[in-house]
Image (cartoon, rainbow, N blue to C red; front, side):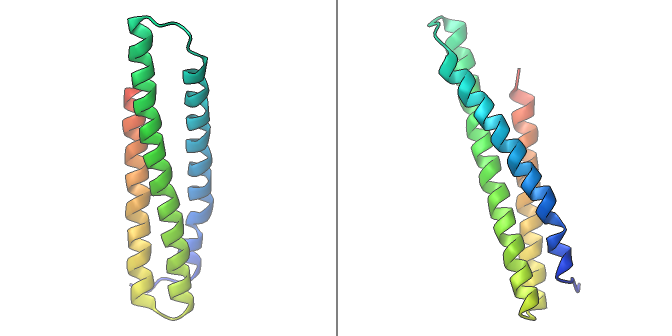
Length: 112
């Protein structure tokens, strides 16, 4: 497959918006945890759920950033006329983006 320099560049807005959405979810959950004062059993369960969601969001962010990094790296490889390497790196970038989205689905499923 022969991809051009603009193919990976098309992912930039999508990845950037995903990272912004993930960060907003993270900040919201972190502030909710900080505002808990009650020590009841249900509060501890809620905090445990929120912490699990925060861990998922962190992993989503890591996968998104890695996808963005590989996308830029694939553009560099294509620019330097390493088409095969650029295509493989771009494929890895897409796989990481899919992983990030899968983690997002997992986080949505445990949100209450």
